[in-house]
Amino acid sequence: MAAAVCQGQLATGASPTWANVESGCKYNLADSATSTTSIAVPTATGTVFSWIKNLVLAVTTTGTTTINNRKISMGSSPATGLQLFWKQLAVASYAQSASGNRPASSGSNGATPAGYTLMTTTASLYDNTSVATSGSGPNGDMAVAVLGIDFSYAGGPGSAIALPNVVLTYDEF
Amino acid sequence: MTADVYKWRAIYHDGTQIPEYDESRPDGRGFAEADASQVATLELSSDHKVAIPHGATPVFFRRRRMELNPSNDNVVSNTTLHCIGWRQEESACYLFVSEDGSTFLTNDLQAV
Image 1 (tube, one colour):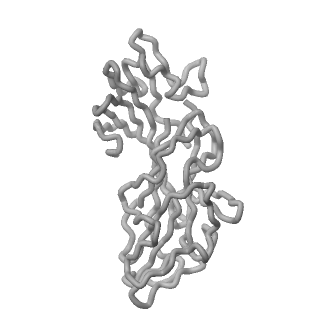
Image 2 (cartoon, chains in turn red, orange; image 1 turned 90 degrees about the horizontal axis):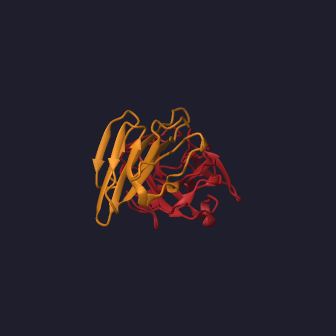
Image 3 (cartoon, one colour; image 1 turned 120 degrees about the horizontal axis):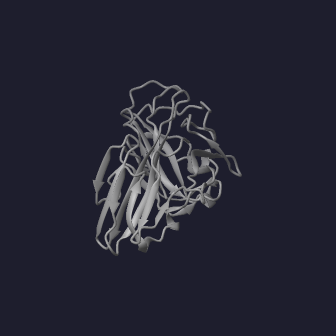
């Protein structure tokens, strides 16, 4: 079985453009994996969110296999006041990350944005569709992720806020 | 991606062996190319074997795990679990084998 080579990628731009994010993806206020446009930590009870990150499992070297059972989780728990969320979205429904589709801020700490699911250290299924690896590019749906920061976050602002790794798992056969 | 530690081999009831790789298929076979109804035993590189009950559906897959780091300066880890087993109506048996050879036997496909 010629196994495929896969990569975690982020979609940006209008088209979109897919790029490797295995070595870094910042949760910011930009349509970018590297921008340090910062998210203002709430100064009173409430939660603010990053711009969306359109993550996908992508085939970079094709194979003769098939992939399903795509799951997402965190490698460890984040600091108090930080939470990651995800939602499944078909690639065909891609929307460029922008201020207009940033989840609305909440007046409560620990708020979950509408349509999203809290990411935990337990893997959650986001797409179980069987898709052949004979084609390169996205394999299956996207997992759109956002970061939430609430008033209980005690760390300072800046681009160096530590976040847990995002873990993608999938079955290849 | 580095080569997978284990390769699968299906052994039919009549003794015919269908390996993932051989001279006729150096590119490797997809597991779906094995005739599921004929599989009596599944092997992972002769190190691990599961007998397939009559009428059961043989199962093979590799469960891959990759980490996306939010920082720019850390190495991302990628690991693979191999699974061989079978399912039949409400029954199932899955043997997960990690890259270091340790094993986990379960009837829950999502246990690991």
